[in-house]
Each structure stands twice: as C-alpha cells, then as structure tokens.
Image 1 (cartoon, rainbow, N blue to C red):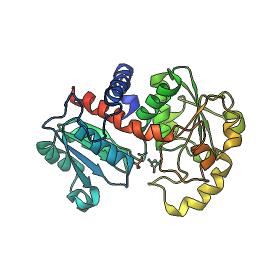
Image 2: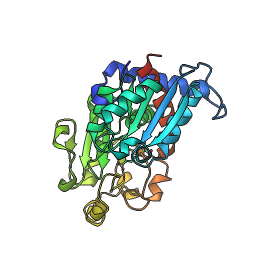
Image 3: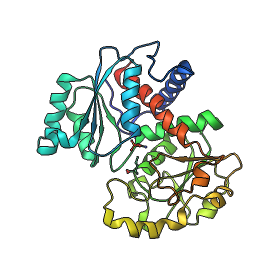
Image 4: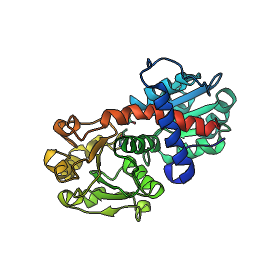
Length: 301
Ligand code: CP
Ligand code: NVA
C-alpha cells in the first residue's frame, strides 16, 4: 500500500512508472466510448471514497469516471456533510473509512489534514489538492507536455503569476523530472520559502518567457485565499497576464497550460487559451488517465 501525497515524496522511478502507465492506458482506450470499461479491471470489487472540502469539477469527475472505468465503485463525500465538518477528528475519520473503503482521495484546506489522513488510514490516501500542493494536476501536466513535445527533461518551464499550490507541485516536479522552472510574479506573491532552490526568479515576464518550452499560469485568487484579497491580488498580478504578446516571446512551439478553472481575460486571455499553443483541454483529459495510473500505483496493481 502506498499513499500519493506529493511529487517530492514519490520516487523518480515511481513517477516515471505512473506517467508510462497513464500513457499506455490512454492509448488502450483510444476511440472507445467514455463509459466503456477498461479491458483490465484492476479496481474490480474496490470501493473508493472521494472527499471534497472545496469545490471541484475536474478532480471530482475524473476520479469518479476513472474508478468506474477500472471496474470499481465510488462514494463522493462532501466534508460539510460528514461528521468531519462537525468536529470529528481526521484521525478517527481515517480509521473508520479504512474499514469500509479500499482507497481515499481527499481535497482539503490544510496540508496537515491530508497528512493526518495518511497517518491514520490503513488504505492508500491520494492528495486531490491542499492549500500547499496539487500533485495529481502536475502529473497530468507532465504527461500532456510529453505527449505533445517529447521528454520534459531539460526543458524550460515558465510560471507567470501567483506562487501558489499548483506552482509548488511544479517546483517538486522540476526536481523529480529534471526540468528548468522559472517563476515570474510580484515579490509579494512569491512561492513559499521551502521551495527555494527548485526554481529561479525573473521579475520581468517578458524576459522570463524567452526560450520557454512551456508557459503556465493559474487563477489569481485560489479557493483558500480570502475574497477580501481579490482586488489587491488583481492589482499585483495584472502585469503577469499571459496574452498573445507574451506567448510570442516564448519558443515557436511552446505550449500553454492552465489547470482550470480559469478567469478569462484575467490571468490569461481567450486568444491564448483558445490559441495554437494551448493544450488546456488535453491537460484536463489527462487528469483522468494520470489518476487512473496513480490509483494503480497506490494499490499495487
Ligand atoms: N484543476 C482542477 O483541479 O480542477 P477542479 O477544481 O475543477 O477539480
Ligand atoms: N490554485 C487553485 C487551483 C484550483 C484547481 C486553487 O487552489 O484554488
């Protein structure tokens, strides 16, 4: 049994294995109806709990569909509807759920909630986003890059905007998959200090994107950020919008990614999101394939 908590706590060999499995599983399904079962059914007779303490479209649907394609069943639980939202501890919740289900995916606020779940659960736990990281997303992003432009090793990835949870998983991935990562954003929204050494900083976005193989951004206000900070964040980040003029300074075959949901015309323009560099919907699709491979990895199947 293995948890999937973060990209920097999973070995390089395991990460590469997950990407390879995801690609193979995607290829094996090509052209088939979305609801069709996979030929192999590694989750047959398995029950998976999907816990959400924050909203979700992609994570919720892609995990649910992925489990079913592999022959398993799911239970989607909202944190607010569970006793968890009424004072029961994570440790007790983890021990109880482990008596019923074979795998737990949790999207939550504090990283400590995820860590407690993993410590006390006796079944694998998968991180479906915390305030600090979003590893499933970046596994899908690495897969998407490699599908389009080959090995990501040695490539230049530029993040423009907020140094947030999604950036943190990119920073972990830069070390594990051996690519160069540049952060461009205002000093007030720098990534957390623990990530220093995983990336370089270039304050001028026009300089940062030169020679980029991949340009990435994300929402300027994350789900854990107070709405009261919205205007201040927008003012600080406006200069880091990914628009056609900025993309034109990257490599000719550069890709554009955004984990979605996006706020069009804020962090990225529609011209870029729907333009020739964009692979945002392949990214969204690859959540499904990457997470199926992650679940197989966790269950040793
Ligand atoms: N990218 C992502 O995790 O999307 P959701 O919030 O819709 O799950
Ligand atoms: N940074 C965003 C990602 C959403 C998928 C958030 O945490 O809200």
